Every structure is written in structure tokens, then in C-alpha cells.
Image 1 (cartoon, rainbow, N blue to C red):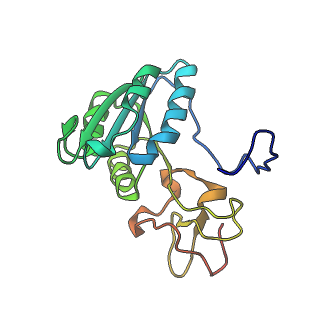
Image 2: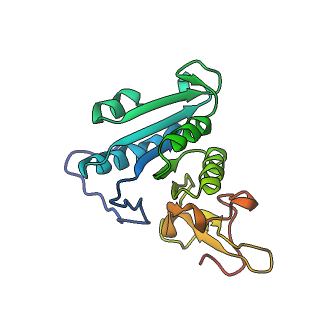
Image 3: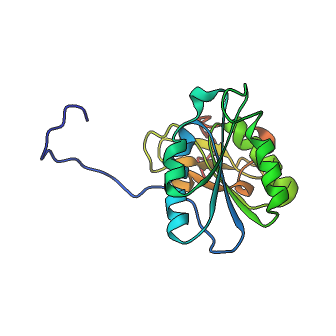
Length: 199
């Protein structure tokens, strides 16, 4: 792309995959993100605010160097909470502690998350315990974008060696309802699904 010139023709294939589904309810909209996972959450925040929803973002990282775009979210009108593992910015600790407190305050909530898989697994555990709806956007390397190469698969709910259930992140995601995924088997991306392909 760096070699393109003004007026050059570029072919694109899209839209691909599945994005966040926004329910028009009065429940609190809580976004949880870290690192590059904040990019899709920014676009989601724009869409939620355009529909008149109040948006709260909980962003976490190892240190202040991992926290991105705080000012950009605040300019949108997003209520932003920052936590870092080392306490170098915002609250010291992991982002799920902030999430637990927000869910204590807003028991009627919908959570949307994007970030590293360990963070998503921790968010899923908090939401599952409280029976709070959660959508996650997975960060997987996607080569083909149409489910042909099977390079971005994750284990779906009910997966076992006897009954494999693989889902293609590019085609059936990247956003999933958390209940669609097999969190107990440490949802791993890029594992490939040689026995029968993706569902």
C-alpha cells in the first residue's frame, strides 16, 4: 500500500465476518478492552452514542505504555476508567476488578470486550458468574477472510475430541456471543481444524 499513488485502483472484498450486535435496551453498556482491542471498541462506542446510549469503557494494560486513545474516547463522551497492572496509570490492578465493581453498580448490563485472550477469558468468567450478556471480538490472524484456509479457528461450545466444534473467526466472527465459545478448553486461535473444517 505504501507504493500506491493517487488514482490507483484497489480491489477490496467485504464486508466480511460478523460485528457487534447492539440491543436497544436500557441496560448499561460496558466496554472492556486492552491494547489494539480498543480500536473496534472505539467504532462500537461511536455507534452506541449515535443511538443515544451512555457508554462506559474499562481499559486495562500492563503499564501506561499499553493504554491507548483515552482522550479520543473521552472526546466522544465515553466515561473512561483506566487500570494498569503496575499502577503506572489509573487504578492499580487488573481490569476485571473494575468490571466487577461496575456490575455491582449496574446489574442490568451488556458487556462488549476485545483484547488479549487471557483478558477475554477473565471477563467471560466474571460475566458468566453474574449471568451478564457478553460479546467478544477475537484477535486472530486471518489469512483468507472467507473460512477457506482454516488458519483462524477457535474451539466452539461443546468441543471435544470425539465431537470437534471449530469456528472460523473470519467468517463466523470475529465477534461472538461468549456462550458460543469453549472457554473451559482455553479457546486457542490459529490451531487449525483438519478433521472436517469449521462449522
